[in-house]
Image (tube, rainbow, N blue to C red; front, side):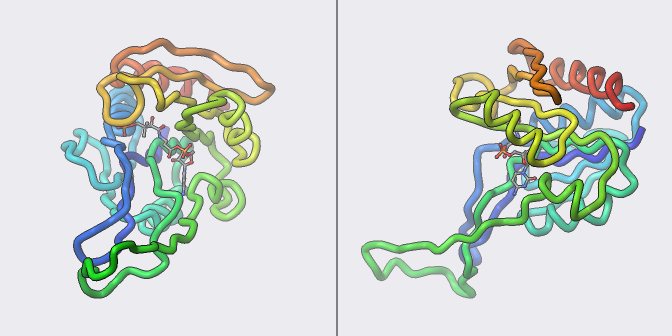
Length: 211
Ligand code: PMT
């Protein structure tokens, strides 16, 4: 099967030397790409800026900002049968990117932010994706409730929910623990383990569920 996977954070520039970002390391998405490739699938990995080597045998597309990730997904998703969105895409970006480095003249500085493109939310209607659609939900409260809401609103077949308030799992850690949220309110918990082992389990689960 052909997989498209997003991974890592995005960087939303404020000026030539500063940006808004988050703590995503890319480990979860790269582990998924490696597991899918090892299971014999074709993989396109669209990655924000991370410090990880490109997995062997995977077609890499490197991007920085949410807009670039949106365009990279838009132009490639039609040829995928499975799309997994594990990237931690910034939800907001500065309205203005200053041409020059912002000077520290004022005691306070107010930044105006605007919403970025909702890449997962564009998959079904805007991109016309008909394949198996997998989103992630990174939550600090009401994990299952928020994940089920994303599943329905974004037309996903599966949402992988992780509680990012728990130490040792989620952002920038070697391990993760997730709950799979499926249509009809069904859930399945996968216990804490290395992202490598978890990714293998997730790819097996997904390939079994693709119609
Ligand atoms: O990279 P690691 O350090 O290994 O950490 C892994 C992880 C915690 C980043 C990963 O497991 C994870 O949870 N990824 C999703 C992070 C996230 O941004 O979640 P969210 O609940 O804000 O977004 C929901 C879904 O919409 C996600 O599939 C996300 O990729 C997608 N999204 C979000 C915003 C946006 N503008 N476009 C999107 O496509």
